[in-house]
Amino acid sequence: MINWGEGFFNGVMLGFSLVILAVECYFLILDKATERQLSAIQLAVLSFLAVVALTLIVTRIAVFSIFLVPAGYLVLMLWQTYQEKIQDAENVSRQIQHLLKKIAQNPEDATAYAELGNVYFRHADYEKALHLYQKAYQLDPVPWLAQKVKVAQREHQIQTGDLWYCPECGSRNTGQAQYCCTCHHPKATIMSVKNDLLQQKKQLKTGILLVSGVALSLLLLSRLIKGFSFFSLIVFFLFLMYLILRGFFTW
Image (cartoon, rainbow, N blue to C red; front, side, top):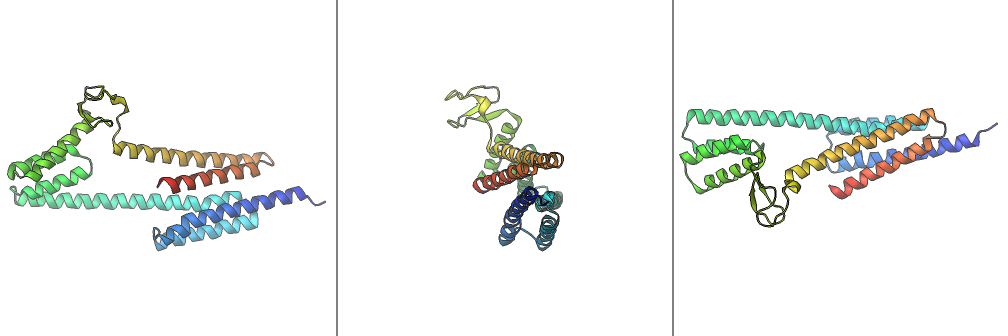
């Protein structure tokens, strides 16, 4: 006797799996390749994973295969970020060594001190940057170095909590003040732009992990409860659409 219900159910699963795979391929492969955000090796790896996922979906109706392309993309991006950090650290180290060599050869070179201070300032080491700017200003008391000293000192005070600026009126306040001296805005709500960006990145990572965990849990549960796969697939599809829309409107 033909089980029409099972055939319909498998057909729905196949359809949704193909739709999800198509969306993944468009946003993670085609769109990224068009914008030249993927190297040739990354494009080849993702294309291979897409073919493997398509084969598994068509031949075995394997729902887990829809994770292959996103997982591959995530691994490739993490590896790329890791390599970029290593390369950046090596470049910074070479730059510091070069400037230290220049200072050793000519201890009166104010420009070398200022350039070395710029390196530390870009990496938020304001204490070292301030010391180097002050040394450069002692050797060559020009206005632009005085400005660098002032900015580095202000950033260092903000970093150590000795100073904060009111987001409402922009007034300068000491670290001990709990309210703005001008508009009485509370200090507790103060958060710099850098902290805002870091918080947003943390929330985005948490959201991605949560979505992945929920979707994976539902798919694993579908292996235990008959007839639950359809619901889990719909939930995963909705979560995927949410991530795509969120990424589209926030970046």
